[in-house]
Image 1: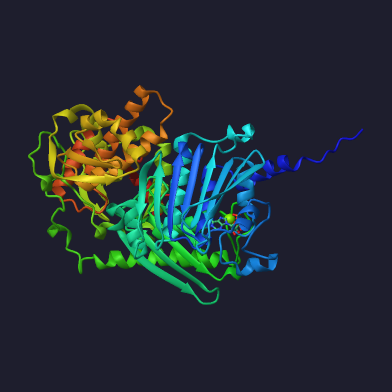
Image 2: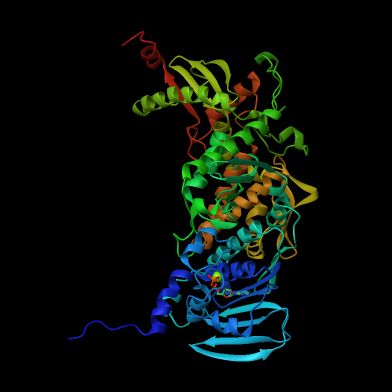
Length: 605
Ligand code: ADP
Ligand code: MG
C-alpha cells in the first residue's frame, strides 16, 4: 500500500515558512532589512496588536518594477546573489529569497511599490495563494503590509505570545536596527501611537540618546579595539558602572551591522566589567564589530540571528580587554593622589542614616553616595580574592558551628573595634575570634526592618525640578497603575505625555537618581510577576520597594566610616530582627573563629 505522498506545494511552503517567520518580530526583521538593502533612509513602521494583526513597513528605497514585484514573492527569488560563491562577499542582509515568499504563504500580504523612474506604481495583494494586481499612484519606494499572521496555520498561531511579549520582541529588534543605522530615520508606531521617533542622528551616541534617554547617554564610555590579523575592528559604547539594568535588554552586539545573539560575546562583556558591577545587575553595552566577511559564516541560522566566527576567542578577548581597560582608565582618573591615614579620614557621610525618620529636609545630611573611587581597583582584586578565600574557609567552618552565631551583643560580650577593611568590612575582635561585618549588607538590613515598621513617619521631599523618565507608553500605563503603591513609599509619579513619567516627590533620604533606578526596578518587578493576583503583586511590589529603598539609602562598600559610625552600626545591627542576612539574603557578618586562625597558622593542629 502506498504510504508516501508528496505534500502539496502550498502546504510545504507553509511549513517551511515557520523557519524564517517564527513570530511577528521575525517578519519585521525581514521587511526592515529588505528596505535597508533597497537603500532606504526613511522608514516608518506600524504595528498593531503586537504585530499579530497588522504590520506595515514604509520605505523610500529603490522600489521594484512591476516584473520584479511579481517575482519577489516567488520562492528563492532574490536580486542579491547569483550563486553560493557570492555568499562570502555579501554586503546585504538578504540573500536567500525566502522571506517574502514565506510571509506571503502565511499571511495576507500587500505590496505597493514604485521605482523613482516610473510614473505609476503597482499594488499586489496576495491572499490564500491568489494574487490581485492593480496599477496605482504612490510615492517612490515600497510599502509592505502584513495582516493576520498565521491565519491559515492555526497550529503555529496558537504559539504566538501575548501582545505585550510580541511587541517587546519587535521593539528590541527595532532598537537594534536603529542602532545599526544611525543615519537612517525611523518612526515606529504601536496601535497608532508614535513610540520611537529617531530622526537621522549625527553619531551613535545621539541615536542612543533618542532610544534610551539621557539617563543612559550621559553615562556612556567609548572605546575601540582593532586586530590586524583577522581584520577586526570593534567599537564599544558602554555604560559606566553607575548605570545598571536588571536584565540584558540593553546589551546589543552588531556584526557587520547585523544584530546577533551570542552568549560567548555577551559573557566577554560581563567579564570586562569583572567585579565592578553589583551581582545580578547588567550594564548597557553597544558593541559594533566590523569584520572581514571571510572570517564569519552568517548562514548557520535560518533567521540569521547567529554568526559563526572563524576565530571566536580572538573577538572575545578583544571585547573583554577593551572594556576592562576602559573602566580601569575611567576609574583611575577619579582616584585621589594619596590615601589619608585612618584617624584623619572624615566620613563621606557626615551622618550615618540610621533613623531616617521625620528627618530635616536636607538632602545632604542623608544621601549617602557611591563614588567611583570607592570601587576596588584591578590591582586590589588579587588581594581581595586571597581574602575571600580565607572567608570562604571560615564560611564552611561557620556552617558547621551555626549555633554559636551571631555573637556580638554589646551589653553582654565586649568587643574591640579593629577598624575598616577595604572600606567595606568592619573588623571586630571578640572573645570567639575575628568578626567581619559587611557594612552595606548590615545597614541594608537595619533600614529594611526600620522601614517595615516606621516608614510612614518619614518625610518626603517635593522636587522643585521633577525628574522625567522616558518609557514606552505600555510601561507608562503599567507603572501608573501602581501609583498608589509608590505613593505609600513617598514616590509620587504622574503620567507626562504618552511615554514619560514625572517624579514629583521622593523620600527624604533618597537622591533623584536612586529613585529613577527604583522606578525601573519596580517596572521590571511588575512585568516579571504579571501572572500574580493583584493582592500578591501588590505585596511583592511593597517588599521590593522596601528592599530597594534600604539598599539605596544604606552606606555602600567604599564609604569610609568613622569609628563612631561603626560603633553605631554594630549597635543597631545587634537590635535588628533577621540580622544575619541582608534583604537579598547575603550574610551581614562572618566569624573567623580563634581556633580556625590557630589552625591556619599551625599553632594548633
Ligand atoms: P532576499 O532579501 O533574500 O533577496 P526576500 O524574499 O526578502 O529575499 O526579497 C526578495 C527580493 O525582493 C529582494 O531580493 C529584493 O530585490 C526585492 N525587495 C524586497 N523588499 C524590497 C523593498 N522594500 N524595496 C525594494 N526591493 C525589495
Ligand atoms: Mg530579504
